[in-house]
Image 1: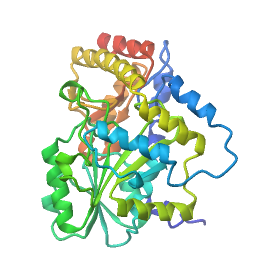
Image 2: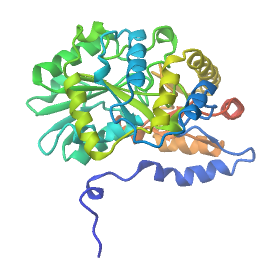
Image 3: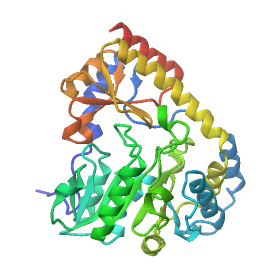
Length: 372
């Protein structure tokens, strides 16, 4: 009898496979399914980005693992607009999407058995998976002071958070950075939704861990993980980057060179165009704001409660019941969402509802929710 291999045997089951029956129920709706489960963009990739990709499509040579100087400079300018003007161009490194970096960061940093990776209690599952891939121990904890003498080597932050939409203010980030520096731990901040703030965060966006107010001008021990998938509709390009501590980024670069983990040259050119063009980001932000308002109003009218959801591409909704019962209720309306249990036991009474559907499908979902 064939047994599980050493890697697959220590990983959890892929969670999305559990949605098959709910998707079938939703597809049986007379007006079709409204899929609000996976946050995959549905709007067009901006023309300015597509033109840059096409112009760079004649790329017979190997691309630079470190990224072109133009790309790293564009990332520096982008950080400067977010309150982090001191990013070193040498400390910027493109990655093949952000999920790849999240999953492999503990391994790339040399973590292993006995090392602890801390991540939020309600969190994107890949933080846990990345620790397991390295043979390290994942620990879900929002309060770092409760960790005791454990050998914490890496602390994951996620602000704005997936799935809750929580934004960590400057003072909170400062406390985490100080705690980690006292213990020699790396802080990695997943900031993929940084420009998608609502309410008080709409004008400024979420603060970065590299913000001068957070780190006092030093990026030692800090990494910010950023993605163009959501703000620029580039999920299909796998376009992301990490920046921060020059020593840590140099270490990541050397391992990635050996492993051939390289962003294609045309994608790097497209990333430059995306980072330097602000109008398309404002336009996409407005689209998501409109969809968010439509869905939130529908949930409010139908007696659901929306918690958090201060930023990002999701509503974190509940009826104070088991998430699978809530999921079934929406599936009977032809709507597919993601159960909060996917993000940890603390999410077991919530659903994550994505804003990534067309205006027509969002309107259809809102009408069904309101009429239920």
